[in-house]
Length: 62
Image 1 (cartoon, one colour):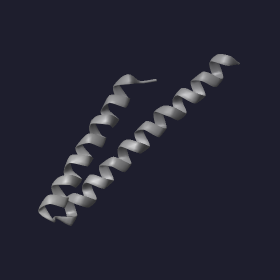
Image 2: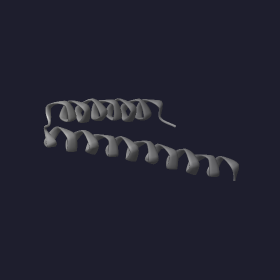
Image 3: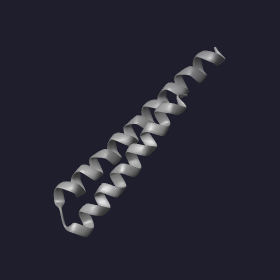
Image 4: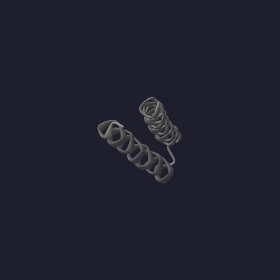
């Protein structure tokens, strides 16, 4: 597990939520979509780390 990668993903998720919220307040669809995209990217990063942890766990048990 890479704590640094998980922290980066969490920061990207927060950044996306803030950008989406700003887009909602200002009515800017570009900010809304970019914010959502950043959240999706953060989810993908978390998933990648989960897969790496699962694979590492399987190798350690073998």
